[in-house]
Image (tube, helix red, strand yellow):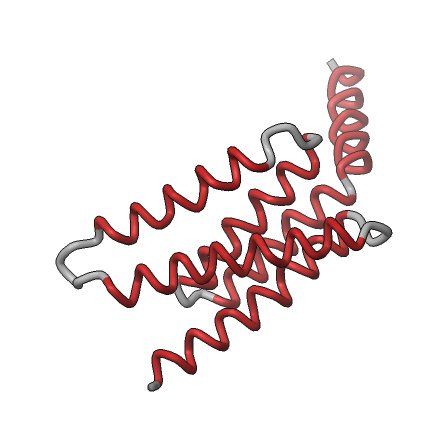
Length: 138
């Protein structure tokens, strides 16, 4: 019974995190928010379920679940733009991390990657300006 409650919380957290990832990347498209949330839920449920049915000494089932989720996302979203493809991979990986039970780590990973994606031009210009100042000193 407790595993069902934990599974329910993992699904709720992955739905919320998937929606947050989709919203921060493209808040104008409801389709991206929904798809990101669904991908996160599915990957979380796959890993959570394989974690429950596997034996402690045989982790092959968990590895097959991880590989299966990544293959599904790769085949479904290969033709998307690079930023959307990264978004769906982030949703998948965050869902798997939540499915393994590391909810805080999944939120932290997602927010760091979202910050990098949203501020990539600022980061690149800062690095470029810093390297130009180093070249002028020489």
